[in-house]
Length: 374
Image (tube, rainbow, N blue to C red; front, side):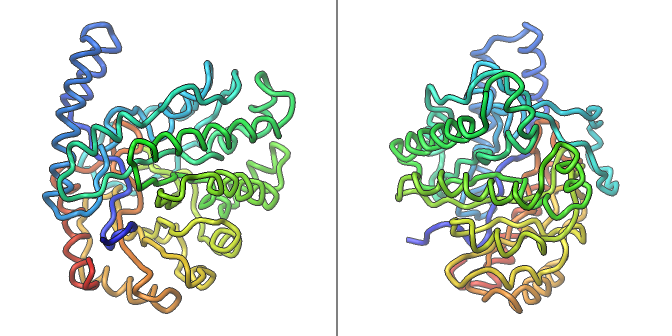
């Protein structure tokens, strides 16, 4: 049996059906029941799984259809009063307007209670997904253990809930360990950690922001690697765990730019994870030279297909870009994917459902052209 990562991968989120978004708005306004919302989510997830299997993917997610964003629900379950708020104006839903992506402001974390795992967060999501898949391996995506701190720094940690950051990190490691154990106990075998901070450290603007709040970004990345390694060391051995890195993906916007150069050595060698989903869909990601630091024991999923633009990529151009990457990483240790999900927040990126399907199908067909085991 082929183990993840697969030659053609999908990051996680999919465009929510308009009817589901409308029902969620009516539910929030008290005009639709929780039961009606759950039934609509169940049906939308069923269709999302069918889409992924129809295009030939060997991996399937639930599209993250029960979440408002990739991180909001998870962290809200880890404390009585923990949230990550967006600070920018709500982007307009400009589907199919192939505008150039723009920079948005980083979301901000508010930590008003201790981080604590009290119940399984995504176990039921996995069970539903597992029951729906026929040929694909179910994948559960969770935010990274450092995402909350990255959104607010020590100031957010110490403002209300904690007297020292060591306690915060200990609670975080324990909470993530318990969730991973619960997922493994339920039969889950494939986890994707979405830790976007690592890709953003190469942006001078992000470095300046960290400096302004009293942090040395070099020390911060070391701390994040150490914390993540603690989570990985405690994770059940039955789990295949990869890490996705991107530079922001909110309704077609991004949060950072810059290559992996300044973090590559630490990212690929100090971080104890077996495979990386790397954003490589635009010049904002830099070139492939940092991949020379990837050790022979690790794999890279090249995020070559953009979820932010309506143009379906040219197959020959994608092949040429994969060939260029083989100068640094052997072909048998490469896979391909979109650079991120299609809807990291529920409003979705400015593309159509048909373009979404066309891009996923292109990945599968391209992978079959290149790899015998695709």
